[in-house]
Image (cartoon, rainbow, N blue to C red):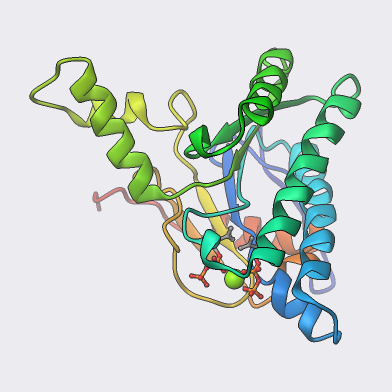
Length: 242
Ligand code: IPE
Ligand code: IPE
Ligand code: MG
């Protein structure tokens, strides 16, 4: 596949990506500030953020992205006020119900990444059911909940210890991380203006390209994806070579 660009006035419009950009990941940040700027409680921002997530998923699929990973809730986000955590968990629950409702029409293979043992048995069973029933779809969506990069690597090491390994290779760790089987992200986009990883995909991001934008996640649009994609294609990935 070839990458086509339509240059119209100053606008750069990405029509399709090629195999150089298979996996895009998003740190969906800025929901709280988006709401507060409107004089609304932070929870209002999370509801809008959830709608943006669905819209951006559809957009990424339409431009030929094969894998998308979103950071929805970190292992550190439990520190937030209980009311906010409860709202996010309710949104997550609603999302799972929507997955069931929309499964037939969508081409989305859903996979949950993170330490899922914290969730109730019934919620975990629902997540596993969605994963099973969408396994044949071709647009892969990793939803990171109760996810932390350090937790993921520690968990991978413990799995290897359980297997009796006393000496581990990079390939062993790659085989036990939550995204095993998925190529590493080519591009990681963080919205909301902060310039940090906040414990996201620490292992997988070794050679990812980063793109940071001040746009707050609920405002993020297809046009913003296009800009991130254009930035990605302007970079030279050397992987340590020359
Ligand atoms: C990201 O938005 C969503 C989650 C972390 C769950 P925030 O809630 O962190 O929004 P800001 O960064 O406070 O604006
Ligand atoms: C990162 O955002 C986590 C998610 C987007 C889910 P945070 O808002 O939690 O990150 P910090 O606290 O600003 O580093
Ligand atoms: Mg934040």
